[in-house]
Image (cartoon, rainbow, N blue to C red; front, side):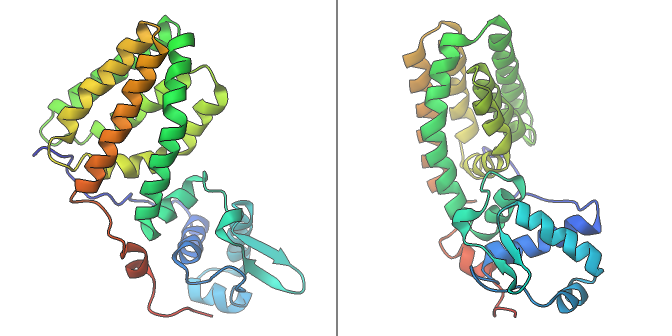
Length: 259
């Protein structure tokens, strides 16, 4: 098999009841069950519906307020905020978008990568020290080892680690933090692109070219190599059997809005 085995859905294991309720409400908001400006059901009804105490529900609401998804006022109650106010770098929000509007998340991730990664590669070629280069080679070796395994189950994780290491090698701490913030989006993108036959084999020379350009302190070559990886990934996503359809968001909605 040329692609990475497994579906592109990211599996979540809940540790607490609080996390379960945050996840359930967040998915409803992203999925459009409650639209911007809508009030949430009254506390007693929503607590009963989600099978938790009012205290647990209140803590879940606070978590979603912190993510920019809800606004609480004494007289008007708890209302859904528009997507423009959500924290789209929040790991939970990214995961809910992956489940509710996967095609849009893939598009947004590709555009973000085009904006960020080539310039990060330029900076890495200027600033990376021998330790940074060694880490990149180690990441490349991990990708090659995973690609050689029959099921290639570790390839996506190794690929994500490589790209995070490249952002770290830029010497810009904000870029490094950005890489760790969007790894859910990268995971989703890589899970889809690597399911295209031949994608894994085709990606390795490009990653090797990035490391060599950084090691050679050639910013233009490093940026060009990263951009080539991104463009290849976009083509692979378009051809992937795991590519979400335009109907993904609609099909993920419940049949009726709940008040």
